[in-house]
Image 1 (cartoon, rainbow, N blue to C red):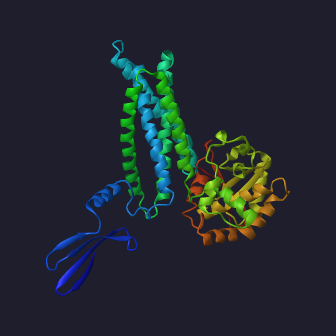
Image 2 (cartoon, rainbow, N blue to C red):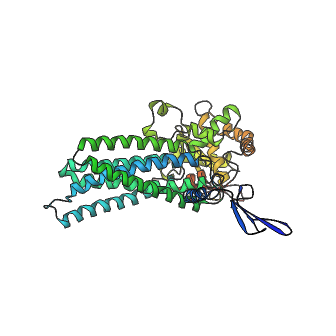
Length: 454
């Protein structure tokens, strides 16, 4: 509030905003000759602005990243289609259970519903065990996979009345599919909220996203009940509406994920940056990387993509040490004492696959360097016989320049906080329950080998 005084009158100006550079005058109060309030905006504009503030974070749009608005628009549209389809699939599911039929028993319907929920709970726990630590680093892909599994779950519910003998199996299969959705969607939403927050306002963004989802839910439920009423007794109309909304749902999800420009690193984004840097000497921005990133899982990608050189797929993290052959163990011990004496990691190459083995005291910067080193080594496979020596030479000559250019351009790396996504990915427990091999240089310059369990 700003006060300007000129005897005998006093003028008070009311300003509103989230920072000193984002202020707007809302009212002017004068006390001469009588008290009067002059609002800078109309009453209706004030009401609408208050309603608007219930759905967007405080300080919007400067408090969120530029990709927040397009993502939320597409996300709300896909949510709306989901709730409409939920009404249609739930109607079919209740009909199959026997709601409205005299022959149906309460205990029978309760048991079927219990099996359905139990399957979903067990599936959620198993999915978390196998993929929980991989959701942060591949938030885009798992966001799409989560909604695809949700579509499959609703499809199973809608199909269940057509096959009475396999009803329980189809219902449990649908619940299992949706359990994956709950885990993956919740985890990726947390990662995206952190990405959107520019002013440590992740809690505010999450709360306002809940308001937006509630509005989409109410709208979808209202439209769903209306359409369920109209299409009742018309199975072809129900299927046409469901499939049409499903296609739109997947399209909206793809557009929502496609507009995200994540600033954290994962193996694929890091590979894109490195490939461009090794060719041009320049570092791409987060927006440029997002346009080149492959969002779909590898099994759902095109044949040309599968045949392309995805070098980050050749980098293996957290291999089972007991599975290494005798020549590989010999190679590991030899390289640890020669090429990686000063590094806090060891690289082992065998049959085109590069294993990254981290030191127990490695930091986020060490992990990033190890991945860059492994990628450079992957590019040298088949071109030279001394890949360890030449890749180390590239690291010595170009790695510092790579980091400096990235820091100067203010892009994706530059700090330990920003590489935390890659750090977490590299340090996660591998899917086969293995442990990482760690080498530690002793005072006598001999290599001590130990096992580090995660």
